[in-house]
Amino acid sequence: MVKSKLSFMFLAIFIFLFSSVLSRTIEKIPKTSVLDVSASIQKTLEIISFNPNSVQPLESQQKITTSPSLALKLYSRETLYKSPFKNYRDLTLSRLQHDSARVNFLNQKVNLATKENEKSLGLMAMNIETPITSGLNQGSLQYFVRFGIGTPPKQFYTAIDTGSTITWIQCAPCRECYKQTDPLFDPATSSYKPLPCASQQCQELQISACSSSNNCLYGVEYGDNSTTVGDFITETLTLDNSVFNNIAMGCGRNNTGLFVGAAGILGLGLSSLAFPSQINNPSFSYCLVDIDSTTSSTLEFGLIATSNDAITTPLIRNSKRPTKYYVGLTGISVGGQMLPISPSVFAISPSGSGGVLVDSGTIVTRFTPEVYNILRDEFVNATQGLPTAGRFGLFDTCFNLTSRTPVRVPSVAFQFGNVSLDLPAKNYMVPVDNNVFCLGFAATPVLLGSISIIGTVQQHLYYESVLMSVGP
Ligand SMILES: *[C@@H]1O[C@H](CO)[C@@H](O)[C@H](O)[C@H]1NC(C)=O
Ligand SMILES: *[C@@H]1O[C@H](CO)[C@@H](O)[C@H](O)[C@H]1NC(C)=O
Ligand SMILES: *[C@@H]1O[C@H](CO)[C@@H](O)[C@H](O)[C@H]1NC(C)=O
Ligand SMILES: *[C@@H]1O[C@H](CO)[C@@H](O)[C@H](O)[C@H]1NC(C)=O
Ligand SMILES: *[C@@H]1O[C@H](CO)[C@@H](O)[C@H](O)[C@H]1NC(C)=O
Image (cartoon, rainbow, N blue to C red):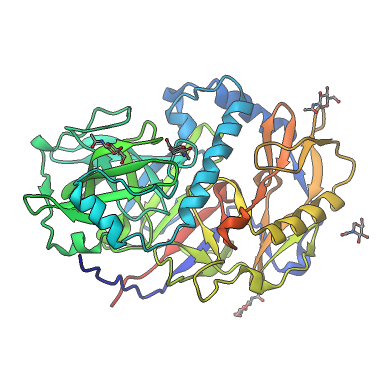
């Protein structure tokens, strides 16, 4: 099948917008930051016993955009689905384990549209047999929105994902479906229309096939053995009282793996098939509450207002991974001192490896081993008087903060050119178990090359806006 090239004018910027000023030039970064140990621990206790029906909107939330055309409530996983874990330690271990599969997924070769893939999908119609390459799963997709699908609209929870381009939901009848909280979507009574194989939307799919009736089939494979395969269709979506007709999306007939609870995925990647492009409103903003928070926040579509509190940095295009959001990180400081790391370490190589991407589905920020080791060593060296604890999951630097509150820890800041993003202590000292906190960064496995990923722990409560323009 012929692949049409996605052509984007990349007028994109990435904005960190603060409600309090946390950005400053690199000379003014403080040496330490204060961690409210008991507040963090309190949240870990609350989330384990949280009743999913009692989620409250984030208080005093400012609108991000001047006049958002759409605003959806954004929920974290544990506010929707009762945690199956009896204690915070097991919840954290599960999250970290799934986070690793997510990193593999983001780092996979973009060009999955090999002859072999298409052949197996086409021949076996809806029965992908290729090895699975990566990860959307229970632990990694942490944020969900709810909106209407079909006519009349029925409400469904879907996970938002900046790492995915296709929007899909499970459809009845299923060959295989995982358990979801809402009843299955039944296209029989709806505005569902199959897309013909010759349609432009079908040709833009990375993996596709034709059914015997010449309708388009899609397939997505995720690294943790999760897959979704089904009909590529158009449907009517209703978000925040706005109705969008003819949105191309997947109607999943065979969905296996670790998707839990939600009906499917809202694709926010950089692609003409992603939801923002399809509604001709490619700018969107999100605010992520802490994954342990019991409040909701927002996902908004529409132009963002710039403000004096905002840090703006251009999105960078990686032609080898054109659907992902990369930013130009140039350095990291610890304890107010720039780490001795060349900015070139963070650059995208001509082969498309390396670079720093921002992801809504990765929890823990990853750096290459060489960068992570310098960061960790400086952090440990600059940390005074905190008893250490053993390693935990993918964290190798942990502290026992029993009966200590608050504590001072070395500051950590990301530098984007000449501006610096100072992280609040709670965005890098993460609770993992009773009174144990770990430095919330990790090294990318050596096998995965030199990619870095800014994860959601480091994005909490920053309004992040992606502004982009799709053009010829
Ligand atoms: C569904 O997909 C899985 C994974 O590719 C495959 O093993 C299974 O046979 C499929 N099931 C059906 C009923 O097609
Ligand atoms: C995927 O499935 C295979 C075979 O069942 C298993 O060996 C492997 O561990 C699974 N991978 C993940 C990430 O669950
Ligand atoms: C460790 O910190 C001390 C100051 O507290 C500093 O003089 C020394 O250079 C640091 N060592 C390393 C390896 O960064
Ligand atoms: C942390 O320190 C307390 C008191 O010093 C001790 O009782 C506890 O066992 C320690 N926990 C870990 C995980 O090291
Ligand atoms: C940062 O650099 C840009 C261009 O490189 C310049 O326009 C801007 O004024 C600089 N900002 C600060 C705070 O120095």
